[in-house]
Length: 183
Image (cartoon, rainbow, N blue to C red; front, side, top):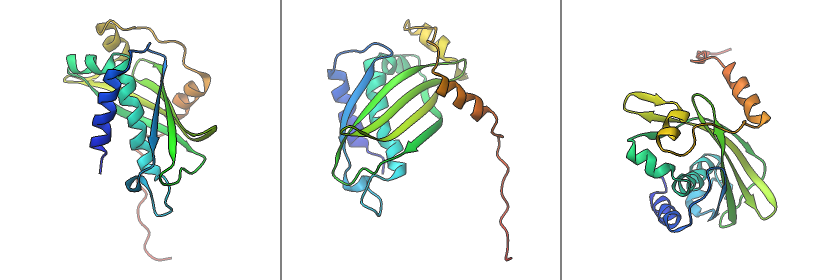
């Protein structure tokens, strides 16, 4: 089940925190709860994606995006992710999530997130999101300019542009693998 209570509490806490600059890093503390674990009693890979939201929503609140999304009647839509899972986060362990906006292109906003247990990075994610309005996708520069935030993006890091270029070579829709019967 989606962590509605954790999300609500996280958002309430974010509203009490000082505002941040658009490219500052939001840092949040979390714990792997029993319902976040898989059969190995560690953070489930799918739940990792959900818990990363507990870093993105507060970032959106603190940099002023959340209020603008509501004001402009726009929604965030995750449009792609690339995740590296490197170290296990056992049940009940505390971890820290770092979340920052990297920039945008003509279609998507790019966010970097990582989960750390002490000095060891457990997971790292690059996420792209689109702004979806009543008339369809809204270019980030248009949305941010309307919000009075910033309409020009800093240069995206090379590893991000490489990911964008590599992902553009994937076919869409993908070929459907037909089931095979017998040998």
